[in-house]
Length: 461
Image: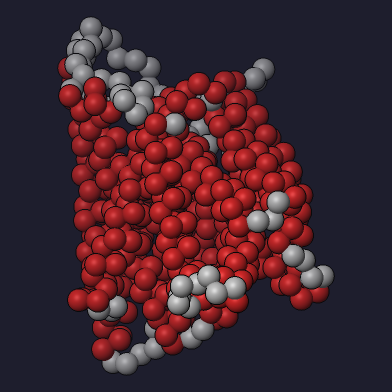
């Protein structure tokens, strides 16, 4: 009979936030620390991006470079897919992460020779922020079963939420005494620590599996089917030929299209409000930029604070009580409701409330759930297809939002209510896609939980 592993104080403590079984708390907490370090590094480097692109370029340049990221991702994602087909898991992760660690160091050296870095750094950090985070969640989905991931991902996701907060604070405290370019080295050092932790987690889990097998006196269970060999297919071909993956890709694209357009609505209303405050003499001597900056500091604080609370106390309970198919629909339904409110009440307080609730839910519940959606996938789908979905299709939503804003600002002039009406229509499509994704996930995990979505189901399934 297998040895029973007693619950540690860590397991018991984490049960306040999620359904943690005996012996699971340590790895879950290490994974949370892992993604914490990734998000911390990103938010340490993010102010460097703003300082360079606005110092050497302009706000308009940022829009053009965002589109440039999509073009570059069309080449980077297939290349990553080829690496997936040729390298084992940890060699893939080490190779890709070491590349991203080396880049800030190279940029720092190039700066000492006076090389302009605004464009290359903006594009690099945009790709880094998507690919490394997606790769982490691929790793987490790879080492957890579907059942473990649904229970433990809420704890892992808390690390991401907390890392963003800490990273922004570190950058705020270091950028003046250390300098903009030195933050590149700080970010690289944090990523190096994160990579060492990833290797430790992988080794620890493998050693734990071997120890359990050696300690068990029960007859050996039948070996699980070997993971299918990577097909070597282009990452985009993998997405387009698999209905479940394509539905997820379109859902994420709609999410970012709606959210980015919503941010534009908020920005327009905040700018108008600031101008009215100055015109009416209610600005108390503040400039328009100071009023807007003060508003957004409070806005981001509210989003991050609510997001952390949701991640800690709500996400696990929602998933356990309602399941993935319902949880994946909560954000699109919330957005549909929020933009209907904006359509009829395009006032600052209404838009602010809607965006805080939308973004806080996105960064907590929705982010955790959409990573859970990859749990029943094959390793190739978890790494290769996920990169295509989380990077290219995500950025495609930015491009579609930019086109929407351009048309609504220059071709068919729309006010805040007009853009909200556009988002209502988009949110309806998003709800339909989320329903289909949840329905397909339920079918995959109940009828054939042991096979990847790109594999044929057993006869009669």
